[in-house]
Length: 313
Image (cartoon, rainbow, N blue to C red; front, top):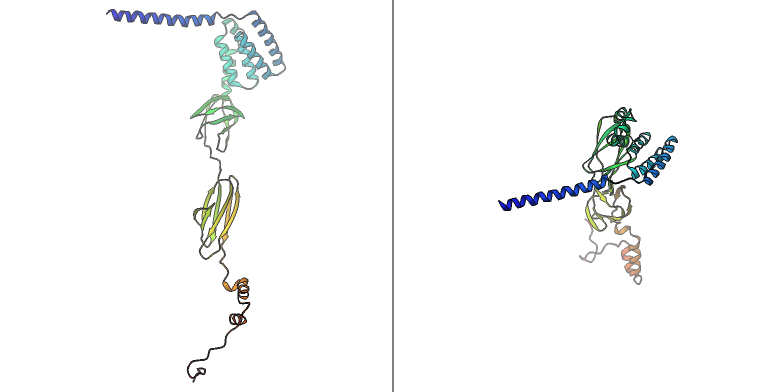
């Protein structure tokens, strides 16, 4: 039993020290004092931001209210930030700030805003929930041309109710874009199916007659056929027995489509070549009899029976 008692005492001591550590940390945070200069500067900033709100410069006022809140953590500045967001039409952000004000403000401070419950209810009615899924990993969501986050499997966001353009973009895919009507207080789901971008070019080859096709010295099949080739320079060669080889150089861009309809020519006959007679003339230039034999029809040979011509009855 004694070892067990020692274990219990040790564990109790550890728990006491751990709780003391957390208590000390919490005490240190709760006893952090806002200096007089912090309050003075925060008051000056709030006055500046209030003036900007009167000038309808809500975005500028929002930045300054945030700086003042960093100095003092005064809940009243949460309320001011919420109203600035509301004026900008950023209702989800406005609701978040005003709900924090409702939680953190003292009863006396909340009493100075008697219409707060109605304001919170009105904001909730102006907000819709949008749920977006996609097939493209790491896709980014934009709502009303504003970045709204990265989609893993699903992205759920709060946004202003009303008509909105939902756009999903991802590397290597064509963008997805859709206009949706987001009703206040509702949940709208969008499944964004992205199509991979066309990076290859399509080449269609037909020949007369059918021919063996090579591209860049690589056999690819027999025509007719359809090829997918990367962008850049390529050389297509078509060969068919008894026909002259056809060579086609080409430069392709991403997404190109090229159609080739090739009529392969038969090689010319021997008698149609002008250089055939020239060659013979050169070879036999020293022998007239040879040229004569090739260019003139010869008379019939005499028979060998009786030394005369064989004639009919």
